[in-house]
Length: 296
Image (cartoon, rainbow, N blue to C red; front, top):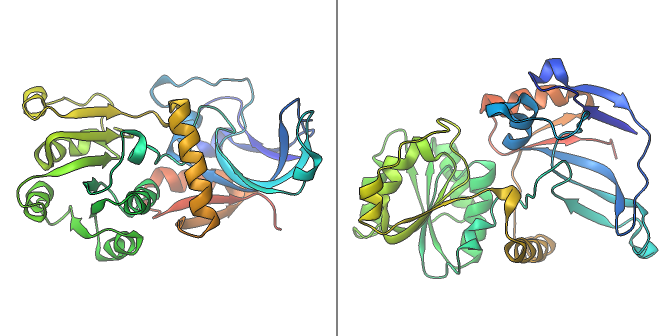
């Protein structure tokens, strides 16, 4: 089989290479997939780059955790009837990831609540808006342009706020009659913590996926404490089993009936994976970046 691998961390164009490898036979309870598409996530590029001292888990690594394909071989205990079945996957390379958006429901039901999704046109934010809307929440979203506002609105956002030209917290308070939002889905805690602290209501929650702009943010302890705010530092690779199972079950249902739109911003062939990583790191792509592993 052909695969993109790296044997040391570093820049994508220096460490990623296309190789031929023998196909791995599935063990008991396992299946082998013929991968059709491989998704590139920020966590994948950070692992490959050795971000913040991240070390390789194996001497040779095939990157990317998310993807889709068909089952082409089954191990002991798996019905042969599953051969040819179309599936999507997560946690293929390491960690435990289920779309990165399960925390929308991981802290309890959201029906009747008001949520603020930071970066609603991004890959995570776009899905978070859809999931929150399905869950019965009123969703506000920050964006950076009219085009991205249109994407967030189409996903289900009830109102959008241009963080480049508006005071986000003031606008949130205006849209919520001064009360603030019940929950904030945050993609960069350091960049938005001051805004989040002002925008969240008493007893509210901030669920943070990342703090890329500053890995060691300064926390305004008393402004958050006086509101009795819970800050959930979410690690998508470590979702509790009950949350993970629930997310997988619900995602499969919504995908099967066409309720979720996965926004694809760019596609690359397998031999241009390094370019895909560079595009992810540039921050210029709106939506998911996908590697077309096969031409089928």
